Length: 258
Image (cartoon, rainbow, N blue to C red; front, side):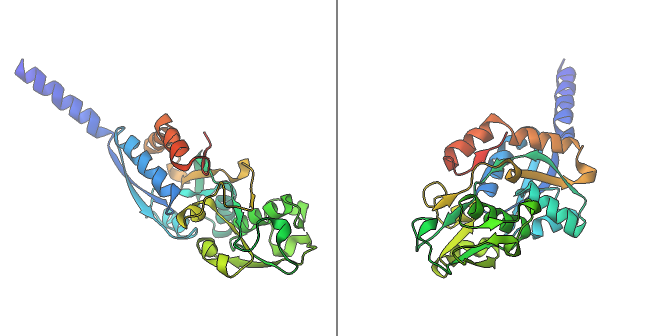
């Protein structure tokens, strides 16, 4: 009987450990890192051990994933990934949607866009997709008009009407909160706003709607998209526990997209 019990215990241990796998996931500091810590907790119970690596910019996590230094990353929306794949020829794909971070326009010198003076300077992200996203917010608010034929891929050169002669300062996204003392307004990604102590719900003088094109994603190398660990990762991320964590932790500043 003891032998049977030991054999059964060994078999159960073998099954449990057979599905254990270690992966590395790249994130940016702030909400993405915080959410992934919760995902890590849920995934561990499913036999998936996650090591979280933080990156301070938007370029390196995709390069690291393409180079095999990461198994996945979770920091970018689909248009940004599409642009990176097109420009850098990465063989990366998205496997799941995660959260949405409505972008905001922040200012220490104006309480509304209408208060911006002629010739005011607005800082926007210097990467094409987030820079275009920032310009679309300003266009939606009626401050400028842009070339609609360009879709999401627009830059300052695609501004067709600019009645207030706004100047655009293109800066690294992580530096935008620091620019608030030097410019009239900055259009800042929510993760960097939160990291800088800004409140994305109450501080912006204008805010983006919950636009589907900018929902964030989990990206992996194309060869891994059907791997068992990817399925487990998605199940952990899309769990009710993670959704509750997002809702209670960020109070509407970050929105669960599943």
